Amino acid sequence: MHGTGDLCRWSPSRFLMLVSFASIFVPGALGWSKEGHIMTCRIAQNLLGPEAAHAVEHLLPHNVNGDLSALCVWADQIRHWYKYRWTSSLHFIDTPDKACTFDYSRDCEEDRCVAGAIQNFTSQLLHYKEGSTDRRYNLTEALLFLSHFVGDIHQPLHVGFTSDEGGNTIDLRWYRHKSNLHHVWDREIILTALKDYYENDMNLLQQAIEGNFTDGIWYDDVSSWKDCSDILSCPNKYAAESISIACKWGYKGVKGGATLSDDYFNSRMPIVMKRIAQGGIRLAMFLNQIFGDSEEGIASPT
Figure (cartoon, rainbow, N blue to C red):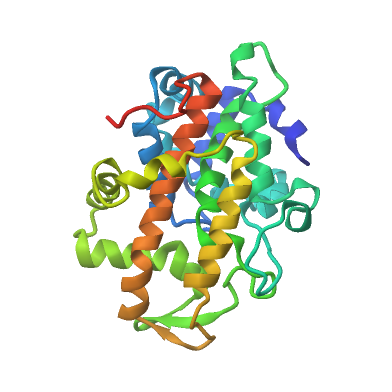
């Protein structure tokens, strides 16, 4: 994938400075909102085995105190910087209008899409066990890109139609304010859920999501979420899921200029929460397999 050669030239101190600087300038998000990405990474980190947890802490800059979620929006923060402009196309997949399917060879030209990015950065991180003397890749950046892109591929409108840019050009109203269909799925549904049900407390929402898969309504489904024989092929499955959901639930019944409110929110909110849960569980599976924990690729919840 284009740009990987550039990743190996950053020193840890230089990267730490960039992380601090990036936190000041945050352009509009491309993927899940910051809340969605943070919850995805927190869910994943809670499911890491000891080896993966140690590797993640080792790769993260010291100033975040081992908290992966603190940098899960980093890939959005730097995508417009000159050095990282090549990453802009890695956050999404454009699929043919109304096809409602994903085909890697058709939709991921030269590997430049979110599915290709996940494969690429997974491959880089698999070199971690070769030791710190391996300078071919910046594995800190690879970890942050992988963690972010696993979140992105689970946002259904990130695998949306080409002509409307994944719903970005479908302008509408969300209750009383202007928005667009992509932003509704990125953030509006999450923020409305936080306001209406969780006292604007993201920790409460995260706990509810985790409760649904540890012993709640999704408990019996979790094993199927992890069903993937080769982690390098898994992103294709996740992309296919997302475009199917986008067609059945994202685009369905929505036209430009529409007003979306309770009916849309109440029927789509469980889907958004389930995709965040799936993203977190699958990110944990990736990191556990990459860094050497458990054959199943996921640890027991803590």
